[in-house]
Image 1 (cartoon, rainbow, N blue to C red):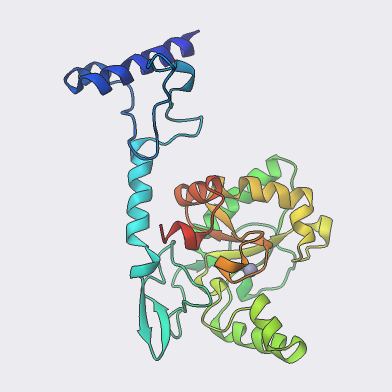
Image 2: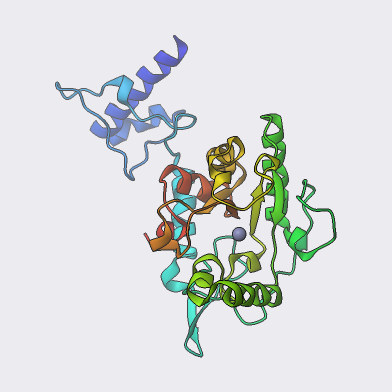
Length: 281
Ligand SMILES: [Zn+2]
């Protein structure tokens, strides 16, 4: 009942706001309606239908603050303005940004190594010390949060492979070339300097239910489905979605998650888009 009243109030405020901006001060307790991408649904008589009035907050629409934040992320990290040509290669100018886009067309600067790598306190699929246990500090804290929330939902995830240095990517890539050929290698692995794992913002995760394999079968498992639905809540995206190869350059990888922060991850999840598309709008 109370909620209904609030909706009525919001609807009345909307009409007042539309009709006479001078009177809007009376609505100051309500978040101002956003202007981007939201049209107020109208009934046949031209009145606002309260049931269809956009609400801010829990039911999905955005407050002005979030819209502003996303707009500034998109302009600060826009794909078009964050590369420079170096020896015929496009090299990213923002390797330390949590929004950096590294892909087959966009390399990290030669020798790039993050300065804040730490080991997240989560369960790994192996026990030895290894560089792949690391992530950048902010991403590591978010991963701990993601694993804790999985655990609360009865979902068992294992971390498999995080940070990867240029040198190790080099040896992985040449292993694929040697065993499966150049063409296959470039579909499943990255040319050294173009792996997102080198940013320290990505990690591959799997589950004991699929023997911790990094295979598409993980996407069909209960754990893979949970990950796809909840990764954004901790600031991660499924970086290489199904049917995204034309944009991302990679086949579907339900196990590879990338940290971009909660706002961007939520927007990318809700829009069912990719990091590339999000930052080229
Ligand atoms: Zn990966």
